[in-house]
Image (cartoon, rainbow, N blue to C red; front, top):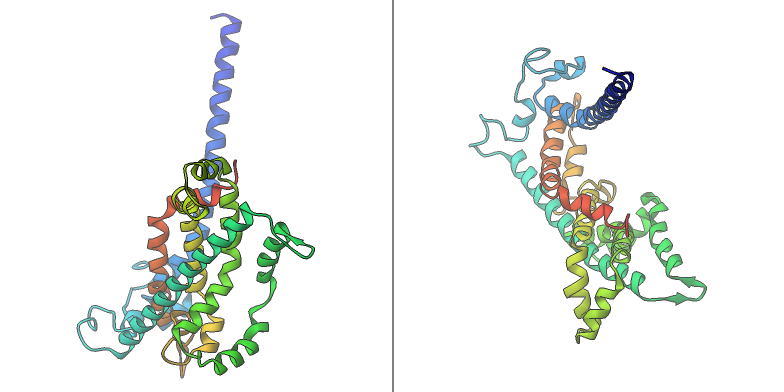
Amino acid sequence: MSAANFRVVDEERGERARWWTSRVVIYGALILWAIIALFPIYWTITTSFKVAADVTQGTLVPFLDFQPAWWGWESLGLSPETIDGPSTPRNEFFSRFQNSTIISVSASLLAVILGSMTGYGLSRFAYQLGPLKNADIGFFFISQLILPPVVLALPFLVLYKELALLDTHIGLVLLYTLTVLPIVIWIMRDQFMSIPTELEEAALVDGQGVWGAFARIVMPIALPGMIAAFILSLVLTWNEYFFASLLTSTDAKTLPVMVASQTGSQGINWWSMAAISFAAILPLIVVGVLLERFIIRGMSAGAVK
């Protein structure tokens, strides 16, 4: 074999070695990040099967470090021994779960509807409110997220008392819609800006009105972004605790409030809190897995035009 052939072989081996090295580094970093991201969920699940002594000792691996028990699930009436019988904690859990579902889904849907129309208007039409133009209006919406929720506590408490909206589903739905609306507007504006205006112009030439072009042409293309905005809104409203604890007492209490109330005479019932927390995040995990492709497409649609 000639010297030239040896050089070619060495170069190929070097390229192959670099390729494998880069793959090992990339996938190693991804695996490490996945472990870090999923560890809190693993810790929550295992804690729901621990007794008090195992919780304080910080054991990790079931059947090796500790023997799993049903303490956390028994406190909810969801263990194999209690699932068939009557249970007040189980009824309360399902009631709070129903409240969270109704309030979060309703607020997210309303935010997506209003945010889509607002984002479409900001992406297609020129507005001017005094010195403010489209970019300033968009920044105004997103800047509302800077305001700490505690600043709004007293005004909303007084307002809801006057309007008889305390401890009601509609009260939390309206408030949650306001809290996530800026994010939805920001996402949907970028979505609509990534869609060529020539498609709507062609629809207008064919006799469609502005609303017809929006419903038949723009919305189907922007659907992944709308689903991504809906899921993000759902996660934020599902996990909201501050206003749910402030503005509700009995009828409209949500799961985060129930999670925070797991305290007893001897301290925090970590096993019960872990069981409720896992039961609360399980629907979000299922939704995220089922709609993953829409989240990726929705979040990346405005990145490349």
